Length: 148
Image (cartoon, rainbow, N blue to C red):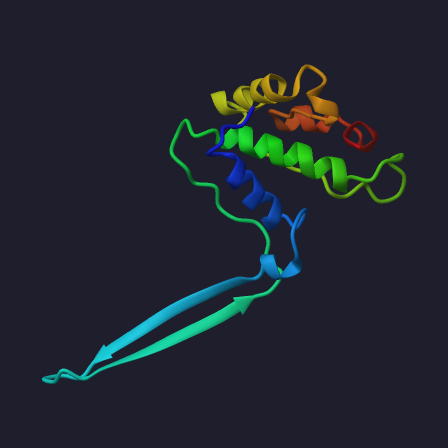
């Protein structure tokens, strides 16, 4: 369950992914102000430079440790996957719209993500297809049908 402090951030994340909101909300406006002072005078010139990046997606989630970034990403993946991943068999091109989460296989993070998915979505992973690969030999043991 997300806290009241996390809900606005989840909404922002959904907008950044283009799941809710309008295309205009995806635009990012980069603003830079260049200021130059003339030597030996009080005269100052400012130039404001703006550049709009239309339909930009994604973002950086960089809150303090313990804020619940993992829970937020799991909520985002769960909500986005229900609306984006096509169903059907894995013939021809693999389905698109999945989410790849990469962690060091030898670190505690790998197991932590698996535990957190079960904690927040339940033992059935909330209907998500979760595939845990911790080494190259694990990956080589899978077929495309296993991944789809």
